Length: 191
Image (cartoon, rainbow, N blue to C red; front, top):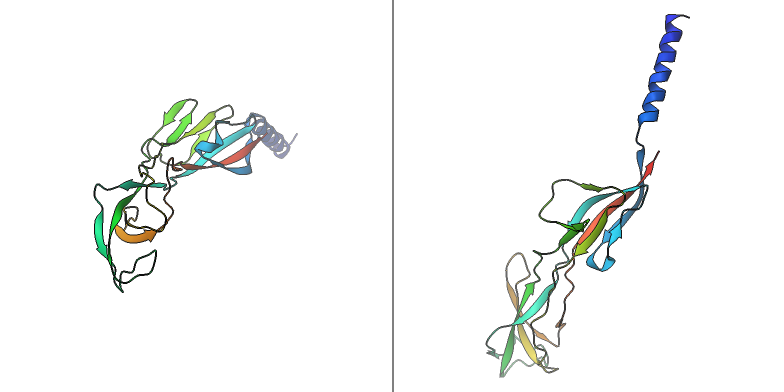
């Protein structure tokens, strides 16, 4: 047997051994979006999940300030309900603030995973994942009659607070959605 043939047989055995010891490769299957409403999920057999991103919902709530105040309507500041450009009225003063997110997170096999994670996280088959959500309850009492203007100090704008008048606007009362959104890529493990 020549050296060349021996080398080819040896090379074939090395490649065959490498293929037998390989654990498989990953094949893209689907993208999953998990929120608190998704419920507990388990990574299926033969799959692996890669957590790639987390985003907060940016939910907000309204809160009452202690005092109402008087406003005089003008051409530059007309009544938002009637369009009147004269007259003085007492208006409700509301604050619009972002819901807290400090307790939002993800439970991995029942253990909270908190804080900013560096890089992607991988979860093997059998791992359970449950998204937790901070309750956000609107503290506004719903006693603004229809057709009554009110003032909102919007504290949700990252570039600074802005104030404006509204009439019968979308006052979200009670529980406010405040769930984080996790993006996960699911891979099949191909032998």
